[in-house]
Image 1 (tube, rainbow, N blue to C red):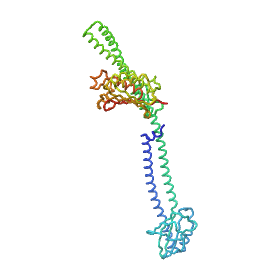
Image 2: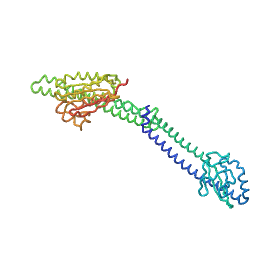
Image 3: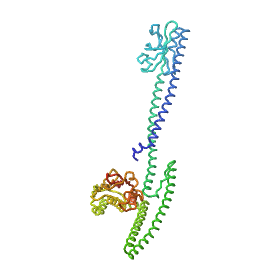
Image 4: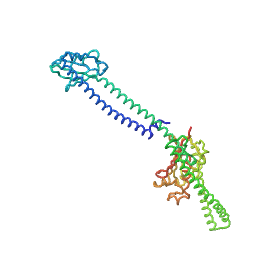
Length: 457
């Protein structure tokens, strides 16, 4: 399936946006939790340093400098990164004892964070994160207690990296999952669209496959199929009634016409002209019934089975050749510009009849010494055929109505005989071939544009 279609689908956009939004929300929540944890941790670090400083001050008050030095040298087994470091200086901040060899560069309220450039003995590592408590002693000396919190800095970096990578992986997996779900959704929609296209071409027997459908799509397909069953039953009933009416009326009309033809030989004068007029009316009614039956047959989709690969340019040449004498009688100039070949899949007789109707209409409504232009070319994956005349045209408000059955533009009723079914038949043929037809203003005249799908190679 086309990846571009999947990425542009509403399902993928919704799922990707949901995953990204959810990931960001979870990241913010976890960041707030971690910030709270960090705050409590640093409060604990400060409390530990404060307690250690107070413990050493108590030793100093009880045992003096000797006890303080013994406390400095006492082992701190098991503390690892929580190991304390000490510095004892005189009032002028000159070192007396301890494993810290340099006074903190900056201090505030007796607290200081040591810079990396501070010198330590061999057990200290360059780049460790340290915090110190500075406390004056009764004899004027100064005690500095240092606590290493590099462990938490490393932990903080790990947590941040894990959060970012997890969010990235979640978004990627969400995008992949969204693409999979969108692909399945598009396949289901394509199945429904293909069914609808077949139905639009007149094959009401088509149904949406429900074998592999699940969940909402299965329920939708089942409901859709039940709707089609109902529509097919109604259409079959209507078609049957229409066919019966057309057949039942055509038979007595044919007998009536034959009786009138026999009667015409028995009368003369004005009576013969009256009988001929009645015969013409009967012929018109028979033509109307034949056209209705023809349209019903086309819309039933029964002719699809006989579709074959055709060259539309050859069909159009035959149509022009057939109507050239009729155009010559009115001195109408018919010009054609066609690419060759124009491959199309369809029924040759139906396509010939459709374009013959269009050219016949153009000649009927084009005045003497008018012009008709026919052009046909490949346009992307479609064939585009345009027939433009210089006739009276159709008002813009009625352009979308001329393909309705029995509809005729008011101005044309007195000019040309007809039953308003010619363009309806053309539309039925074009729809059967999965094409489209539209009318436009040629200023002056009418332009009819037909688009048909290009035949597959």
